[in-house]
Length: 279
Length: 287
Image (cartoon, rainbow over all chains, first blue to last red; front, side):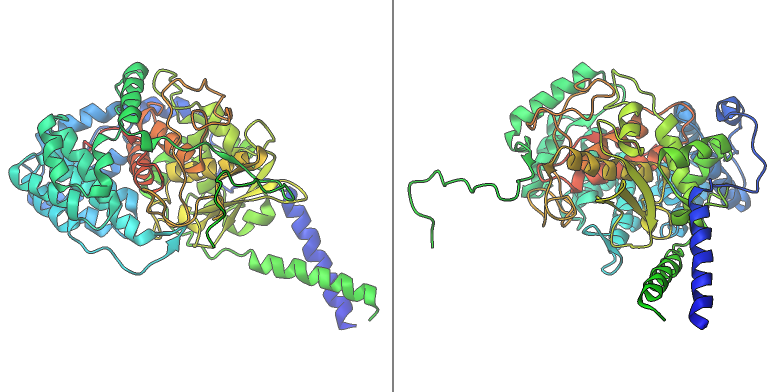
């Protein structure tokens, strides 16, 4: 009779699953009555933690600032830029941002990216060394491969791309040399592409900058120098004009016509050529 | 034991086996800063997730071990799924002078209902880390959008953030569009095989069908004219969504979410297109 007991257990499990199928998700936490929009104002009013602190307090202040900056809103972008510009000489804080970027590079890409962004915007001399070290870290050879992509390589390369942004924004001869090295020699396309864009933008998209870049860029990647940038402040007409010019200069960038799925049993099309197929 | 009883027993054992197989292995003890920052903008809005699970046709039997009964715990997969839906549903400015597409397009692509974007679909999760996500057609019942642990566990990949996750809902949903209208986007999981042209992501390559701002009215992203002048590929829809999050979000969207979306958009635009690169979103200023 053991099989009958098993059967009963199975039926109970199946019934539980059928019940679970219909159950809505739930939480033991009390429901929040206020709508999210009602809390926006209060959140935007949270003051930024000070960066003007003693060396001993720098690490703590940097962590608190990153917590705040991550949660800060799109509307506070310019305010944060001003604060970071004023903090450019706070070397201990800049070093703490670098430490945080390194500490979280494996465990939380978004936090590490945030730390590199903040450090880059500071234009601190501490950033030069930090970004250089980041940029030259070897890409991991092993790791999870998903949809043709080594995700650990991608993770580091995306952070290195942000480090390149920081180097280019420092706009010194030495940091420009690093950026141009990355344009031609970095093993990741992600970093090379960002370096091209960062060099151009920081040199006001000048003709000279394009000429310089073309000396370094890999032959197959020359099209990246002409890439269309979606500048957030730019109106549709301006962007559309740029896009039209790009496609005119690069007809190879126009995709071929999409294809329908071929129906099974459809007659094969005869070749257009007069010659027989090559054996 | 009679044959009919043996059959019944086999069915029951299959159910049991499925239940065991459904237990999650994905790390559910942590969340990325971007997930936490977005979460804090709603503080676990129950009214929303009670709508969301229906809008995405999510089922307790698929998500039971992934935070279905702990829906306010941002470390779990189901809460992260609805956190991404929250961004997709409310987070865009929808400015017709600037945005590539509108919320109506992205919602139409990601949500369950049979519409001009796709046939019915439902959302599940998988521990398979050889994919970010997948779209599968089912002969009976709705089609399936799976999202992988890589979109939830910040220790594994960059994509474990709300923008990238919502971007994947659009990517997989767009395979549904390809299926609905019988378009052939390639035989490697619905993409071109190998690394043709300027694409470096093996077996995950698409074409970029460039279009200007305002080329599509909001709600018209599903349209095509059978030529490259009015068409989208899955990776392209994802890039355009991520660009819209990064550059034209609602004023309350956290900066950590925007930064991660921008980084994903530009990485994808540089690596996944045969005729690439796609557009560069925003400028390369660090902040």
